[in-house]
Length: 410
Image 1 (cartoon, helix red, strand yellow):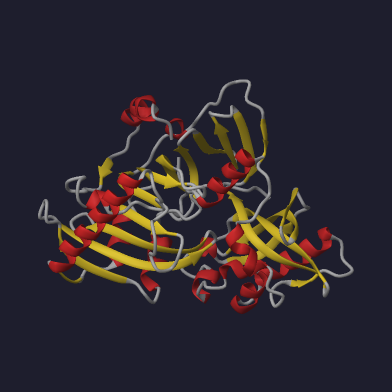
Image 2 (cartoon, rainbow, N blue to C red):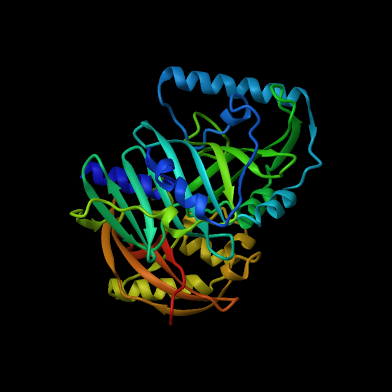
């Protein structure tokens, strides 16, 4: 069971994998694609390419010390030869719009402190703000999407897992994410010169809360191309401690063929459902008695229907009460005001409970919600509802969005 739990945790917090032989396997496919690949210049991989070890913890003591000292030295050098940046995030957003796919490499550190090589290929949907399909490998675990489902294959355990919806790289590196980052209170951009190459770089720092909890970022943009070239992120708001994930290199593509993002596990692989869980870090938020709603006198099915119907049309303040994990989100982020494909028009249908699980607080239920957005599109979102049994009675609270589906037909 421990291996299964670890895989679930990696999927939930992760957002990226691909195998050591992936480059060889898809080189031919990429060559056939009528796309233009742009490698965001990273100067010498020695300098800025090493800054952003996104979500990294430690590969070894020697690696961690070298990375940390290198980062400190580089930031000091840049700050000593820098000014407040005239560069604006709008420029990066505009530059990014022409690219629908990307490949990035780096490291990811699991909850138990093991650092794994990370290799990911992904393509966005037509809005440029959500993942349409992806293929990610972290160590011996490969995860991919197909037909609005997310699959995982554990080569070490020779086991397969599946869950409904696209649940892997939930925050696509698109216009919405960058725009949100630029509006937070602690956003700061500093322009300087790479002391190794002389190329101009912009270092951006910011923090925000999302469905994976609080995160803070250190991002490097190339001034000439305006593209992000590397990234480092921490599971807290203050960039304290060792970062959890590192993206050291990013390649941008105008598009990629389906075959470049596909994976075929062994023919005899049996797939089982990924256990329904919530992150340990969210338990304190979900246990707040001021959040959620009473479920006394209702079946779990009825309670799920009621809380989810209310959630999708509630005011931002009420959303924060029903879904406390996103309590730090701005009103604009909750409404999806910048993108009509994220702004809810109506609830089409709340489905029946598809899967159950449990946490320290009590039972968990996975429920599909079919939502129509302002642009007319309809998408399925799988929501997790947490039930709580206390001396005050039975109550429930929305715990997470487990995944989403694209191209849903009514």
